[in-house]
Length: 122
Image (cartoon, rainbow, N blue to C red; front, side, top):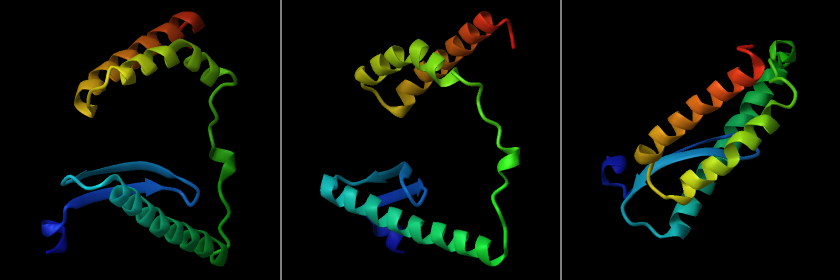
């Protein structure tokens, strides 16, 4: 019943160290209220992360780092050089998730094409 009457619907995702994503809707709430809500969500995430870590310790489970696949060295720098200015221009143009989505999709397609051309379809 509270959710139906709430002026804020918010989903917060993150780690114990940072908020990674927020998604939701609000009915003209002050910025301070939104910040408190995100912080409240992050505090709950921290508790969950700590509980998961503690459970892992209790069960003697170690992180499987041997299956971690890292990107090729230098890839992020290449992507930054090719796309940072274009993505900045997209955000400077304003818009919404709906209007920016197709632009981001086109930029991703352009990036993939450029990288394939440079690397010979690796």
